Image (tube, rainbow, N blue to C red; front, side, top):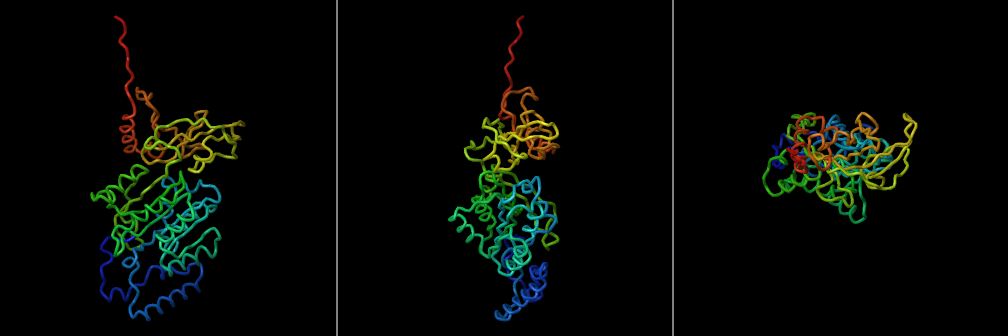
Length: 380
């Protein structure tokens, strides 16, 4: 992330000479010797070049993600990360020194993480702090463009993406758009993507931003972060969070929020799996419920109209979100019969259904799919 498209402007020499890169201040948290080696490397490079290193933000759009925000991005309602099974693979395509990598592993220690970082110093910090101590983390020193090209050629896909991309570079003022697009193409069907993006997404009227806004609102949602979300990293830029979910195979475009009940043969599982991968491979599941001492069946039904969150429902109708379905419950969706109308049930996740503004928006949009039943006049 960078603070603005003007961040590539030259800084006064004195300001640059007194700047200590954030990477150096945080280097070697897990290995003090690594910090010394990295500082030596920076000093050597500066002496060779005859100049002090430019601030990370001006040079390559790097602003680290504060720890509390990183944890928020890796949890409900932004992602289903903590519900993913062991071995699921998550991509962090602009890893910096590993703030989001650490948050991903805190949210779900059973997943694997592929981290991509073009800056060799920050990549070394990420490696020292994460890969060296955790075989489930793999760090690639590469631009995301280069890595994405290789991954595409090799058919590598991911179950999820968490990213805080550079907003702008001196030669590319809208680089974040390209990074989100490349990450989207590396997602498996049913996979999710959460990204920090500039607030300009919500209001710029140029073709690039308008197209991106339409795409994001079709496949997910976006909301503004509180003012000062990056203050701990030295930035007061206004930012938004984008949440996207990749459509499932065979899903009719624009209708996944109209809930349906799949009739596949149930597959027995030890416990309900409610992720995107499960919606593809296990859309109907049966498991033994110890509380009721009997089998229970759950079915993937569709997505939330507003945020595209996956929704599941139990055959016995017990879809209380405080139960086994949790945030994936279809139980708070919009049933036209409750409003004296006819048509399909429209998906609404618990998070959107319990927010007054979101609920009203969902209801108004759902009415477009409903009709008023014809009532014949009684005989006189």
